[in-house]
Length: 269
Image (cartoon, rainbow, N blue to C red; front, side, top):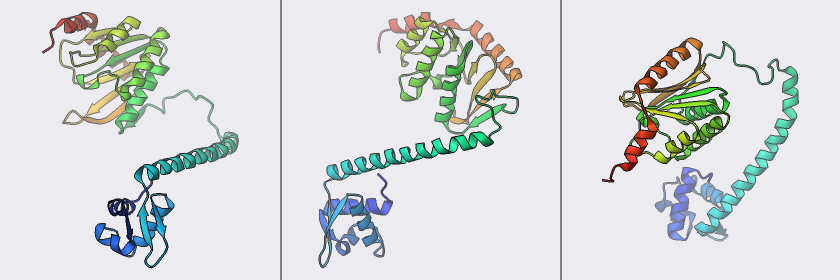
C-alpha cells in the first residue's frame, strides 16, 4: 500500500483510538516525537486519516474499508499513468537505440552464450517453460519427486506449454515418480494428448530437462535437498551425456499408464 513502518504503526494506533491528537497518540505507537506530525500528514495525504484543525489538531482514522478502497484506486490510477508514460518513452527511445545497435533482430544464440545461472527458483522454472514453448522436435523431462507437475500456479504455465508442444507434434517424454498424493489426472491427460511417460523403479535424486537434444536445464540442490540454483546450458557434449543418461533410465522404467491404473485402484486409507 506504500506505507512506511512508522505510518503503519501510527495508523494501527489511530484506528484503535478512533481519533486523537498527535501528542496523545505518541504513547500508543513507536513513532519518534520529532516525526509524528510528518507521519500523520502522510496518512492524511494517502487517505487513511483526516484532520480537524484546532488547538490541538485532532486526527481521525478513516474507515478501513473506505481508506484501503481509495488507496487501491489511487495506486491503480498511478500505475496506469506510469505505464502509459513509460510506453511513450519506450516508443521514442527504441528507434534511437536501433540506429546505434549492432545486434541483429532475433539473434541466434552462439557459442558465447553457453550457460545461464538462476538463483531465483521461480525464474528458473519459467526458463524451463520457455524451453518447452520454443522446442520444435523433442522435450525430455527427468524429475525427482520434489519436482512434480500440479495445478499449482507455478506449474500451470508449464502444463499449458507442454500441451502446446504436443499439438505441434513435439516428442514429449517424462520420467517421473508417481504416488496417490499426486494429481494423477494431469498425467493421464498428458498421456492421452500424446506424451510418453515412464515411472522409474529407483528413487531419483536429480532433475533435468532437455529441449531439442541441445539445450539442458539442471536443478542443483543443497545438502537439505532444497533449491540452490538452476543452470541452463547450450553445450552439445553435456546434452549428449544427459540424453544417454535419460535413455538408459527410460529403458529401466515402467509405463506410467499401468502405474496410474494401479494407484487409482488402491483403496483409500
